[in-house]
Amino acid sequence: MGRHKSLGMKLVISFMGISMIPILLITMFSYYHILNIVNDNNKKLMKYNLSRTKTTLEISVESYQDILVQIYSDDDVVHLINKINRGEDLVVSKNHLRRILRAYLYAKDYIRDLSVITEDGTLVFYDSITGSITRSSWIPNLGIDQKQLYNKYIDENKMFVISTSEAKESLNERNFLFHLGHRIVDYNRRNENIGIIIMSVDEQMLHNICTGDGQDSVAYSFIVDQEGKLVSYKDKDLLGSAMINGEKDKKLQYRDFAIQQNIFDRDSVSIDYVHDDKLNWDIVNVSNQHEVLDEIKQQQGITFTIFSFSVAILIVIIAFLTRELTGSIKSVVRIMQSAEEGRRQERVEIDRKMPSEVKVIAHQYNTTMDRLLESVETEKRLDRQKKDAEITALEAQLNPHFLYNTLDTINWIAIGRKEFEISRAITALATILRYGIDNSNGIVTIREEYEWLKQYLFLQQTRLKDGFESTIEIPPELMELKVHKLLIQPFVENSFVHGFKNIERKPMLKIKMEMWKTDRLQIVIEDNGTGMPQSVAEQMNQGIFQETEDKNQIGLKNALYRIRLYYEEQAQIQVESQEHQYTRIYITLPVSSEGGRKTV
Image (cartoon, rainbow, N blue to C red; front, side, top):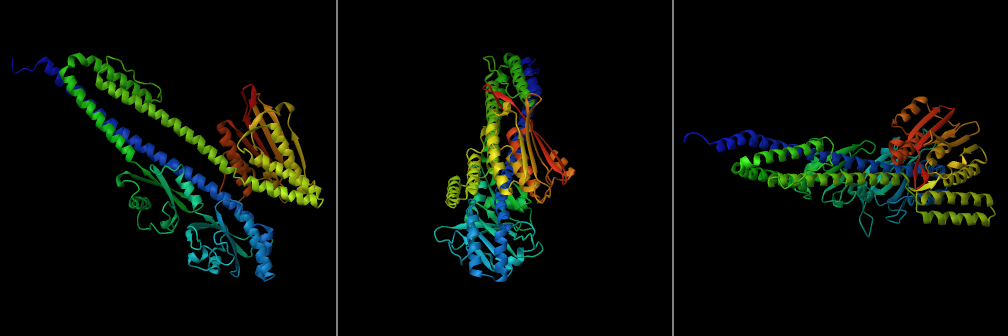
């Protein structure tokens, strides 16, 4: 009889063979499965951060590029450069050009220098760092003179970028600048090269974009140009230095660089990057995985500790705990499966009959799921903040006090000279600007939008000397509907800036609003301008915008994108156009009731 195993022992052995080994395998599988999920989520988060940084960078650089376009297409600038090239009134022409550059320099934060190089190598600039008209703060550090700089970029027919370098002439503080440039365009003589314009921008603008919310303990970003030189980085001493070569994989070299900085532990460094084709820059994100790895190790330790403890207890009291343990495990597994299927609100019910080991697992699972839901809510909140930041970037504004004071000064000058028509136009412009700048992301009534639109059309009538016709059809019952401010402004402005350009017939603009299907507001903006090919309009309706320098398409793209940000998929936008005939835009928005008032 002694050679036979007892029933209890057989039960223990059977339980060990049938239950504990599979549970051990499941635990190990779950650990590695969770590890893979965490790694995948971290990669997705890094790509999301990179995408957000890239979008913010492109929008910011485009806003500076817009100012550059204004300069190189400015008729006064072109006229003065032609005079300088001909040697006419050199001193007067240079001083006048310098005053124009100074005015543009203060149009946006972080612009530190504007330089014009003519075809004979003459340099005319306004530099806020040196405060000098003879000493440039950045050209001497490039290793080439202005004539070589002119020859290098004069044949470029698009914006060119010069990487970050230090401005050596600053006496009080260190300044690092990167540069955006373009050839000067004389539209009367398109094939002639007359000069280039270069805008120097403070690298701090790039640094602010890379740092984001400033959580350097979790992640940080830096920018590298096509030559492998640092364009933006927290350590200013490394800016402009080469950090990669073409012999090794880029990602490995970026990781080696991040490890050398000793900011994060070597084993916790995670790297990813994205290439910006417009700027030809790499945006590199460095993430700290230390906390994630520690939590996974702790979870692993807790899991195996609980498992070992459970085995010891179950061997001693297997007959008593088998049924309860089986039921408890099934309960936990069922809730885990429901979470995997998307029902993340369900939790394990902990009762007094559960073994303590299973209670710990259940409590840990419930806590983990609570944290996961909090993380999801945090991500949604960050996404909303991202949308607000993008909208704010699309609606970048001038300093309002400077703008109002300047317009008021011009208005009084006009009144003093009895130029009352000019005074009325300036007053209308001030009203328009005040309306647009004050809480530009706010909600207003259609009546307020209508009053702003009348002021805008009055200005256009003044500018074009009654050279166009316009009609606005808005039923009285729609006047108190709430909408986002300046909702249709980009489309109306697009008609004047692009649609009516170079047309021989009298320009006509029609704006109509009406209720559609009882709960939708339909807005129609139509002009008889230059229009666009039907194929391009169809692509826009599909959300496809080809890479182009056509500012008409770029303007429409940004306007449509803004409405998408406000209303997401609830907005419907349809573009109809026939080249040289018309453009008609249908905007359909949802109408909801809030506090007894209808809101779009």
